[in-house]
Image 1 (tube, rainbow, N blue to C red):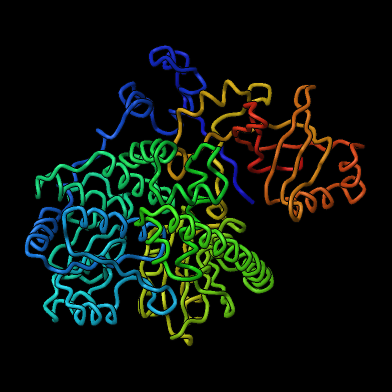
Image 2: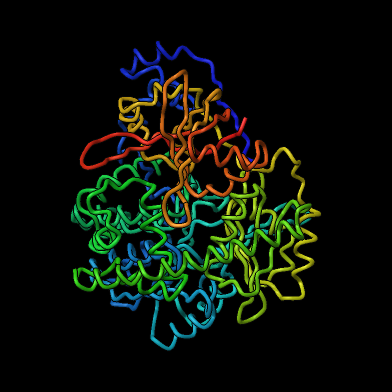
Length: 588
């Protein structure tokens, strides 16, 4: 069950509002997000790209760009090695497009999820040597590739690592020892000695910073404004899809990126918007995170991510439309596979793992490409860290997703001897291990987990209690200044107790949409809930019986209800309105 916590921060919201020409409600919402000083409020509401940090502050940035400038001048062959997720694909596209504009001889290779696994491997190093590649440039990977970097160096290949993942380490008697690969340059803001002021940026944003620094500071080459903004769009797209906190410089990046995606999107994304029937709708972070992004991801999950990379590189409208259509179909296939696998995972947890703190679920038939999505579903449903493990060509592979209270990368590092390979973040990770080590992985992770029961479960942070009569179109319009919302800058959530549920209706395929008719202070309202129809049926039957459920479906009874809700725009036949979206509920 999700934990509800109302954010209660004291303050004179009327006074703050008057000083900054905003309503007391908006003043409170900003303070809930740590934005309370007048200067902070102005920067949050009106700040732009000038808030972005100088890329030259990234450790080894000048060294990396110097190497690239020399390679461009001498006509050396450069190869980008990316990753198969959205961040890796966008980062690869940024680097390839940016370098090609300088006249560089550059191509890109993205690992195949099943054949190659994550990141650079020795087969790619040997292929690069055969192909006469003289400079390898990684993006969204490489910080864990010490052996591969050493192998490339032995072939005389220059290696530049650009990444944003945690730096591997080992704990010794002398303290923590970081295992940075011995590349010719390593650009990763998470290096402990990197002076960059904010390390929460994605791989594509690192790539964008590298290209802009190369043009602006090293080559002294003017970059066309439209071209720069196309690269910026890709960095913003990846920032959303890689679930980076929308704080610090990520916020103005994504804010500007969304403006551009709604006015002059990159060719490939424009065609994807068309095939997904989003052309007439405004693109928010939600559409990227849950509709557009998954189609890019589906390429690397179900086929090869090089197809998605071609979508972001092509300027041919027909080719872009064809690829966009293929990605849509791949994503539909992926969704079907995910539903089946998630059902199996949940059944196993409830049958076998109910007492575990960290769920390690072996699904041998689960396609390894969807393991991360299934882990996310499990984490969301049960509020526990989840690892989904499946058969691979050699041994086992898995993906992990975590809750805020559990640092997944550190948890895996504590049992690093089990893995043949692993890497990731606080909230997500990937790994490989021998099959005979699976039981040991589950046992040791649970023995090491020091979380208490109260720390499990997703926490819903409620901004304020708000009667439904105040949740109107005027409030929604004011809330839009908080966009872009997402990780680290949540959309506003409101709580309301004392409601009366008077009717339930179900719509859509498999009754996926639930319409709730409720009464608040004598007035009737409609609310909408997605993907939880079976759950609310079961909750009502458990508390009040089957007869009450049937009466609710025919408007014949009343049930007390509490909700956490958000406000969403709803345009119907050109008329702007709102929807009240139930994010969670309690049958009182």
